[in-house]
Image 1 (cartoon, rainbow, N blue to C red):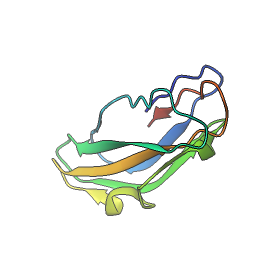
Image 2 (cartoon, rainbow, N blue to C red):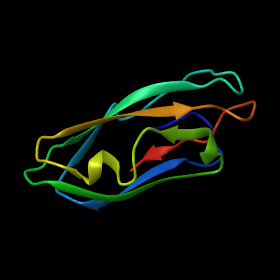
Image 3 (cartoon, one colour):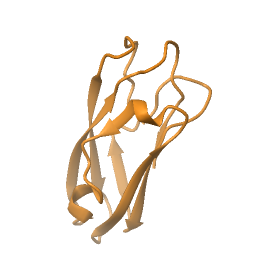
Image 4 (cartoon, one colour):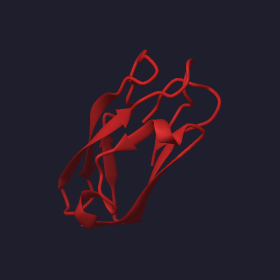
Length: 107
């Protein structure tokens, strides 16, 4: 997931085992948002591999990581995702600074 600031990325790191994960959309743009205003976007994780995926943890990192949060439990998707399975979550953004936020990458 990406926002538009050039200073430092926010990263949502997923740890686990499996054969293939696809995020839809691949990039989330929240557009121009006023400081203190919360916006959200729905993201889907799809297991495109032929075996189950086991998630063990997730984290968000980056300069303004507190401005981003999501509805995922830890571990995400109930801890696993069957082959062909889909897990949907909401990504939230509530800026705390004026100006562009760091670009984030979902991993």
